[in-house]
Image 1 (tube, helix red, strand yellow):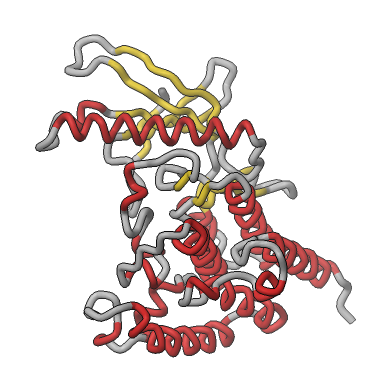
Image 2 (cartoon, rainbow, N blue to C red):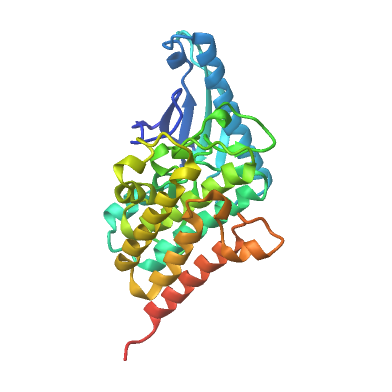
Length: 333
């Protein structure tokens, strides 16, 4: 163990875990997520807290094993896991997972490189779209896609890339988790509007996959404006119609949310680089559509694939990244 890592601002879940920067004897570095059973002893209902801590740890550990089994190349790799005993503590067992260590998350990258070129932003987004497609193909929804979970590797090289981290709030169709019952499984600051208004749809696709699509669209928005779709919708909605005040159904408030959405897209279009504004706003529009039943790439609606399939989005982000790279390399006249 090299040092303890401070808790991330706005981190979701992980109430019973502590992060450490660790080093292997051969010099390799990693991030260790250690389960803190002692924290559960401070809870009012200790047996329930111990059960929750254990189930959260086992769920995340096993989910990363599944990602490794299916070779999900754009999900952060869990290098090792296990238990050690440290005598002298109320609970001597410490369970841990060690992940590959990223340089930083994309929020930090944009803080230090405010003028980061569009190609690199699009490449990072393409990697995250691939990560979500890999998860979805095996019945897993991430539920907590946000800038702090987009991790950057090898940033100083041409081969820099991003991966999606933190599966602690994911939903796996093949295995139940305690947070499956939550209306909002991840960070509510990045939640889609239907969840903020309390909608709990029974279908996995509508409730879970559509949430991932919304968060991906919001991530695209963040990468080019520094804002999120949820924050912009809130600013456009009349106070009587926002999710903190509304006491009716989502169907009743949806027309007002749709109006706020249209206004938001118009604002966004004005601040994105003109050369890619049309394409990016079209992607944001289909991914962040307030009606989860209509969310997803429009071409999916007339095909046999799932309306929430991400292959077309992956392809479009790849083409945009290539196009912007070519325009940068083209000689000026």
